[in-house]
Length: 139
Image 1 (spheres, rainbow, N blue to C red):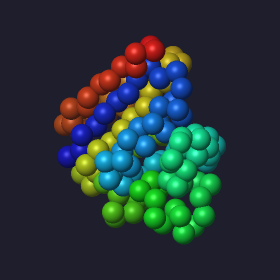
Image 2 (spheres, rainbow, N blue to C red):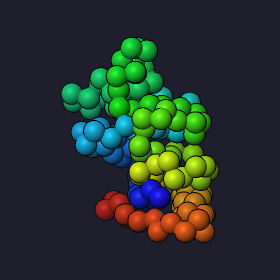
Image 3 (cartoon, rainbow, N blue to C red):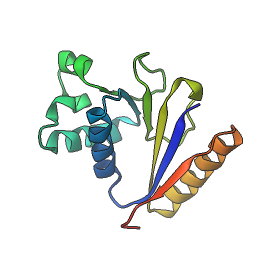
Image 4 (cartoon, rainbow, N blue to C red):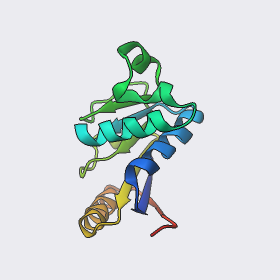
């Protein structure tokens, strides 16, 4: 089963996601990133703005560059077989959790984000997992 990590109280969720993906890529993790189209576009723009990291920026990259990138952007959970980590930007708990080594959940500061994060945290626990919680210092 995966290591599930919740990062909460995030004032800048796309910025945090970009830094998390940069760190994951540097650790040679292949990450499947799931979110809606607008959120993925913002995240891709943030990745392009990171020094020396534009080659991994996903959505805006050419098809050839996307194939070489350790980051894969999608609106759904049907992931490439070589991805071992999932960054879930949706309100859903992903299916087939056993296929992942890591699952990352990012929770903003808005009350509705906090409530949704709590529901997801409880859903992971209900499946027998022990999610880890990391609170943002800016919270």
